[in-house]
Length: 411
Ligand SMILES: NC(=O)c1ccc[n+]([C@@H]2O[C@H](COP(=O)([O-])OP(=O)(O)OC[C@H]3O[C@@H](n4cnc5c(N)ncnc54)[C@H](O)[C@@H]3O)[C@@H](O)[C@H]2O)c1
Image 1 (cartoon, rainbow, N blue to C red):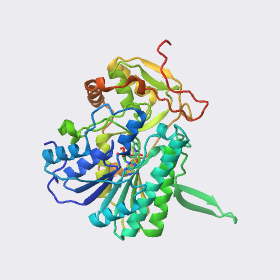
Image 2: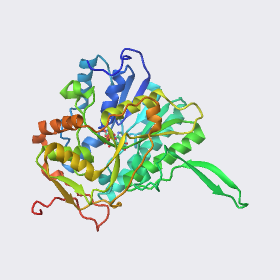
Image 3: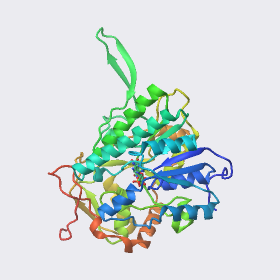
Image 4: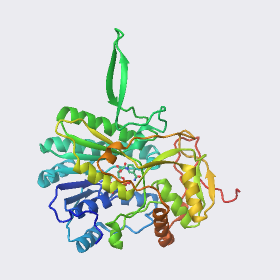
């Protein structure tokens, strides 16, 4: 078996993975279980239900949870427990399972994570706010009520900072500022880096940051907040072991992330659709690095009473049109510029510090042709599952914005 760590049989920590059925949560659960940790997944299957609502699907087959867990036990000999709980609503159930399991660590992925979905309608905005803020707040409240010393590892987004950097490298959570007092004295302080959310989804991640700040200050909850970039790729060492363990691959206009969408479009004979000028610069990370970063965050918890630890979980930045050109050169697929449905600057620079995770031992996977080809091969293998009508990004940020629809008749 192709497990990454020699610690496979070393008894580990008790870890709960909230949102462990999702794109990042599933491979993380397998990775942590593979390292010998005792893993419990909590999920309410809302992501599977959203596929039903949008009449969309993952490009790759996503097997039922029971099949996934049995396959993992067959392949690894490791048992993962599962409980279906809506953590935004079922507070008592969450408290009960936390009291029963007494986890050392809780990894929190259980939020609605698509910016376009969060902007579809007032109902989607309200759902995203209610789900994400209640999920995070219930969890913090459960940790305090349990009285246990649990290390909370949360997946935030680097997108909360907006896409302009005021000419500086975005630091890891905290900004050094100097303010002038009324007497003219200059005081040096560190504050949370100001957020500038670009969607309702990013707004919830910005609010999460304040919830963490408060619960850490008031109740000394130990928290690591990972501000993650856009994840690309699909499989990890563990999900590649068997088709039943395969990770999801979102390709639709709401949930598909940009590089995976470009690779999928090229693989299924659709032009690569670039929103606006493609001058937007974004931060990226491969899914294999996502699981590794979470392992590193778990292995390096904040000390008791330490402030919230914030890591930028990104490995590189790219301009969107550069990515489109890379994929086009690799596959021969044409590029089509379409309207940008989002309300965002047409062009931006982005520079982000990621020193913390590098100092903890992250050896970043950077975008290379081999890995992009692997994603393309998966996309080709499952091309028959693509619903072409679901490819365009149709959710617009305001009434004035136009969907990112490709015009088959334009040149
Ligand atoms: N995928 C990315 O590119 C990316 C980038 C930056 C940050 N993140 C963050 O990482 C986290 C996971 O993202 P993902 O791509 O795996 O998303 P996902 O939608 O695939 O997974 C989220 C999982 O959480 C579950 N969930 C949602 N609300 C829940 C609730 N109230 N109770 C129980 N379960 C609930 C869903 O059913 C789903 O299985 C998110 O918080 C997201 O904001 C993701």
